[in-house]
Image (cartoon, rainbow, N blue to C red; front, side, top):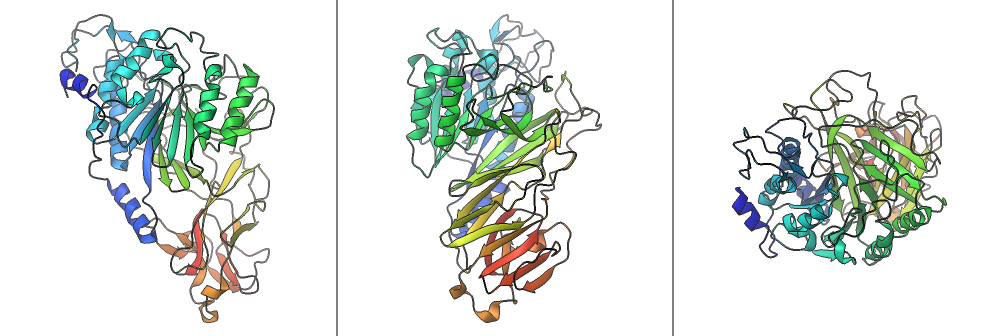
Length: 567
């Protein structure tokens, strides 16, 4: 698309493009939903900082913008069938640049020109998404923090105010209550999801010059926007800076994690009270997940610091920023290029983190050229459900606190715990927790219980040791958990006595969406049926039916979706 056509597309009134042909992933997702009678799951993507060094002369990445990486991610989001993509700031490295005379294929014809504004290049790079009917919703980072950039964003991305024809599947936009933040801080509704995007930099009217306090006067609007939604909708809050960063000391509420404690208390309390799934940010160029407590200790939020989509990668600083011990680490991966896919299935959300090697030997590097190719692996899978519960399980702590019920079905973990492995630590040596989540679906046809979704028992992701070598990552996660025993109650009126021991069991959904005996999905173990209650010492692969308590149980080392039924 040439410059004239690009600029024209950004000025047309609202009129979303239809989603183009779905990928195989999307088709499988729809087929599984149709088989279960459920609403169709759908997904959106999240990406982070796309700076490219202005010290290099790389025509593949003009205007200090990582166009090559953006293009690779665009293709992935198209293949996933995403409805829209959000970027958490730092769209470029510098707001202006001198275009070398040798850039004769510059998309805006700027070869040889000086002091060219760079944000139009980032908008141009989103065109592949627009052409596929996928919306793109950015927010600013500290690399485009000026008043001029504040005016450019709504003009280049009119969808941030609900305008233009690149709104994707947008249902509604909620504009900031502050006029100077129009198109900068905003919320979008798509399906049963609300995303609140926060800008903390100089505003369109020149106010808000102090990034350390720019969220404070937005707290009322943030809380109202989160609270003013249906109880069956998801909410996510996105900003460029984090609740507690790992490399950068500066964060969402000031120059360090101790700044503005009253406002920080109010913000994290609002996230918890309004059942926000995750607070997401960039800025640190690494994948990092943690639970963050408010300064007063009365509320907690789960944060995701998003992986780099840039030429540079950061290492957590020493000493660590969390001097008050308010952060509980869940997972970390350094020195990789990554993105996130959020799949929404009614009350349930599943997040998948994909990453690729930066193309050189593993470790910290400033790229001078784009990777020659990308191989993305699924490194983490986690999530939650609005109709479930969550449990923070410390190392060496038992899983038996994990219990939940729904529409008469009771789920319990009878045995097992979070094994304290030497490698379950971050770069600081902090031991990692597991956040075990439950969720539910109504009883499907042919079953004798509701469907339990159990997640968060996977081994913690830890890839940070710079002494490792080779292109990493080089594999998907194995999704193996600690060995544990899961019990699920069933309705005895729906099961004939002759069916007990002849295929009726704790069933799990496999990768093809079919129900199979849960122990068939284990990594290792020996399959053995027991009629009766679970007893300590039963080995991995043992499963049973207890007619006296109307429960099915199994010794497992995977998590997933479970139901009581014949397979």
